[in-house]
Length: 310
Image (cartoon, rainbow, N blue to C red; front, side, top):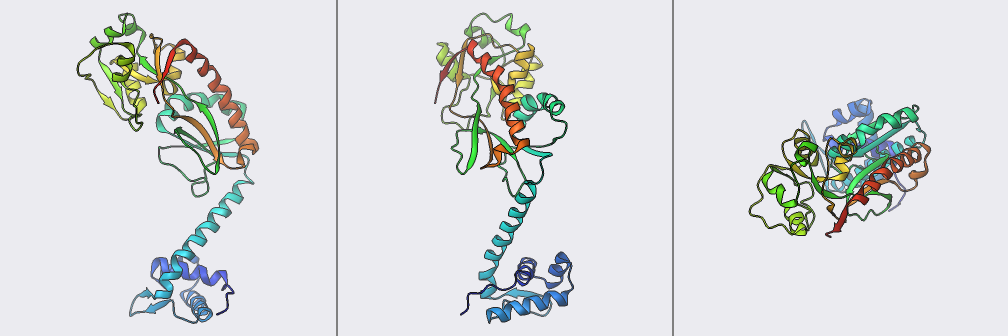
């Protein structure tokens, strides 16, 4: 049996028809007439020497050969589409598509972007704030900022910031707090965004490191780090805050972290790009900018005695 591939247009007609199980819908998708599409599929079947569809009264169904071919054809055209989009992006040095988690985007990245935009007016920034892992090719992403332990295989990955976790509160509340034990009389805000770690840096762990005995630790629980931080900013209590999310509030003085004791974990923020794209001009400019913005945040960590709990 000859191994020569059939024409790409015939395979494309088959893939669309098999996906829709309708010649009419496939023809409409490909902007051809149903007769032209049927002709392409007939040529493909002749090339194979076997039918790919069973023609029913008002529908079509795949034969065994058609069902075998479909997933490979679908994967092939998906790879071609992804490759074409990737090739197109190599020609675009004015659009930068970035994804990051919602809390990091809202509390750290978004407030600083005016500075980047002013320094780089020729770059059109587009953001997707999501915890879902997006695909560079399929989703058209240039840069992903992610929090976790990695490892990141097959991509360019650069550590950005590890950060620390410690009690944070408004200055008026901090004025009444003299010792870690005093915190037990306040509303404790629980951030559950790091509960996926085997050793969560929560209130119980911080009190244990501080040598404070306690009963049940009540208070509101939030699955998103920025929600608990917002409650603390409104004076609703004391949050076990993540510096990466709270840094803007800490630097402005809206929140304070009065105790030197802080926790940190192995998980950290990384900037991830497709391998080889980190040197593209607009990606490299964002990379240099974000590393410069993070440097002052690292300096604030020196005011704390940080305990690694991994």
